[in-house]
Length: 346
Image: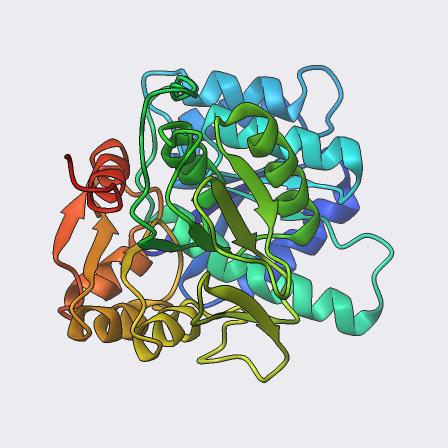
């Protein structure tokens, strides 16, 4: 892993100073320049050659979103972490930023208590370092075509379980775009800001052939529905039954994560439920141990291909733990899950 060399772009001098101070305190992160607008940033990128940019959404002249699109469609795209307010319009803009190729969207800690502020900004250094070591798309990925709603797919009842964090909105957009209306019962852990997760779920439910819902306690896992867990105050596990049910439980984070993918995968393994598990793009090692438990229980286990995952840390941890049966690109991973969760041909 190489160090992050950051260019901070924000029209507010106070915010530039704040984020520079935060990042300079982060291990393996160095701020090499700042810019107040797109024109200054363009010059600084050419002169300083940063390997990651933090970019404010709202700037005078060319907006952050417009400049992001310029960066991502240039001959030399860079990892970009967008900074935006946690409002409805800010969250909508964040989803647009993911479509254009942003590695992550980070909430500006506005109107926060000192404790909330310290907790929020403490994440930024880790995110920027992960972004500097990410795989950057050279151009915006087109939206996946909506799967055939009446394609004759018949799910076997086998459960599909995923985990993802940084880069996950983009990855799930593609994977769920391949899901048919009668998709396998699916539960996903998405580590992201709750407001962003809620808006992503609403958009996915509208755009996808299947139903996409926020995970709820007692929800039944049936074909045709994807359940996404994102609440940072609760874990999600699966309770065996006919059908199996989701349970949201309050307990301490597991190895720093809540909801924990390892806890989710472990509950499926212990319950002896037919499952196919997958770790997609993300930070850290969450899910690796749980995927190993699924594999030991005879379940098929997958990881997103490390060379194409936006942030390869989580898939790499699963592969290095010997917990992965196959490492696949997103399109192939979606096809594998659908094929292994389908009813056998008559």
